[in-house]
Each structure stands twice: as C-alpha cells, then as structure tokens.
Amino acid sequence: MVLIIDDDVNIQEMLLDILDDEEIEARAAGPLEALAALSTLRPSVVLLDVTMPGLDGYEILRQVRHDAQLRDAFVLMLTGKGEVSDIQAGLETGADDYLRKPFHTEELVARVRRGLQKLS
Image (tube, rainbow, N blue to C red):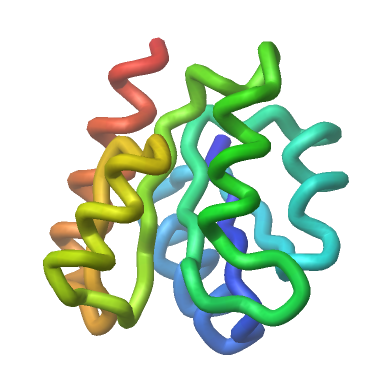
C-alpha cells in the first residue's frame, strides 16, 4: 500500500487517480494527519512532499526512519524542490528515491512499483 503525504489536495487526488489506474492501493494524508496515517496504515511506500506547513517532509521522514515498524518503508520524496542540495538533503535524511515535480506519470509508477517490489 502507498501513502501519499502532501499538503495540496489537488496533488493528492491526482496521485490517487494515477495509482488507482495502475491498480495500486493508495491513501492520502496532509502533513497534520501524516503521523497518524503512517501509524495506522503502515504503508510499504510513502510518497512524501518536502515543503509543507506544520510538519515538513524531512521531519516526517526522520520519524519514519526512527519507527521500528516503518523504517523499512520505501520513501520517495516527490517535490518541486529540485536543486542538487535539495536532492542530497532528502537522500541524506533517509529517502530511498527523489522525484521532481512536474514528473512523468510512467516514471512515477515505475518508481512506486520498484518500491513495492523491494518490500515484497
């Protein structure tokens, strides 16, 4: 299962539609609901935005990596922040992969499938 964490409801809905078309089970949460959703759903893959109000993606990622039941989840940072330093920060914080917005649907699906296969 995939959990999408993004503060933009339109992005959440678009990603849910893309994954639904590929028959990939997914749920979405904003940054304020993210920790509760992670705890309840225990996703295999997390699509995580970086810049969000309240709780940013880096802090959520740190919490995922420190949770014994979540630390093996495949985390794909999906964000508009695409400078080399942003990518480096995401990977050094513990992300498994990094994809810039806007993205190609096929590339997103391939990366999500890779994450799901890694954990099966």
